Amino acid sequence: MEIETLCIHGCDKTYDGTGAVSVPIFQSATFAHPGVGQTTGFDYSRLQNPTREYLEETLAKLEGGSAAMAFSTGMAAISAMMELFSPGDHIIASDDLYGGSHRLFHHISMKNGIAFDFVHTSHVERIRERIRPETRAVFVETPTNPMMQVTDIRAVSALAKEFGLLLIVDNTFLTPYFQRPLALGADIVVHSGTKYLGGHNDTLAGFLVVADEELAKRLVFIGKTTGACLSPFDSWLILRGIKTLAVRLERQQESALKIAHWLCEQPKIRAVHYAGLPSHPDYAVSKAQSTGFGAMISFEVDGEETAKAVLHRVSVIQYAESLGGVESLITYPLLQTHADVPEAEREAKGINARLLRLSVGLEHAEDIIADLRHALAENGRLK
Image 1: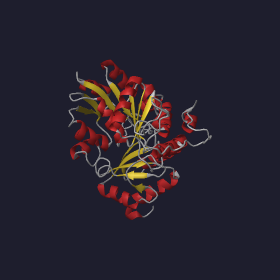
Image 2: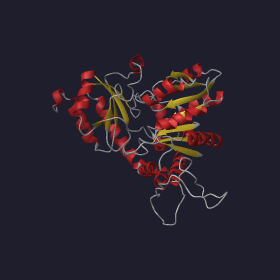
Image 3: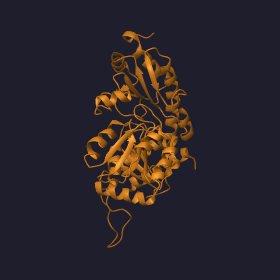
Image 4: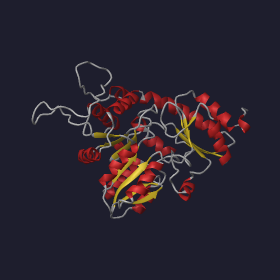
């Protein structure tokens, strides 16, 4: 079955005899037992809920995994995953990470005795150089947030298997529609379901998807013990979003490519970071491992004053955190997503006062371009 069809029909479970086309919302905290030693398969919604189960099995199918676990947020999913590791363990991670992941690793995981090395994971040899006896995993974002660096998942998987390491891939930006890390050799896939999977900027969610059944059992145990499960209603919202995932991403990517090319021609733009541009250093890797480039663009303007003027002047595009919804959103990583990253680290990565991140929505591409043209014009006047 093609992925477009899977997005709409999900898994093949049914939970009632009504023939409801939309999966029911089982808004119940607990479930009655038929008798002593008997169960309907559901006991308590922290452990499992029919609506959440349907969503998890749908996402496992989309990613080609054996199991998926749904959490209340993307950070809740990553936090639960980190419980696989013990004090003294070492993890190698992409040095360009979403600010929330950076904050978790530096302020929570390190406190708990887990050591990290952060490297440019587009260069596999740099990962190899940091492997030591206590290394347990490699954590990769690809494309990265916000600099859009791309990691060769197959190459890192081969290296991880050579040393018996877990490979964890955050697939939020591309989703299983454009990229399937498990098929490329990853062990765990992470998603902020808040973004493209939900697609409407109206709910929070997170996911872990795995191929190995034993690893799945460990993560299910962690999930039910730590308790940050996704609610039935939010599970239904994400299921609703997934139904249109394919058509949304195709349209958003089409617009993003037009906008990226337009930005490259503007005199006030100093750099455009978009994996779909042939000038991107990782363009060939993206072509080899993904079926699309997504709709996330970061670009650097000619000065801090211009960056702030753009944020002030846009109107079709909204100045807000998050990404992946039907509305185009522009973010200032310096003050928003990466505000907790130390200044020296930010500057070294290129996350400076001139950098803006654009999540291209479903508005007409020409309207988004017109909005950016107005925002970049001297004194806000169109030219």
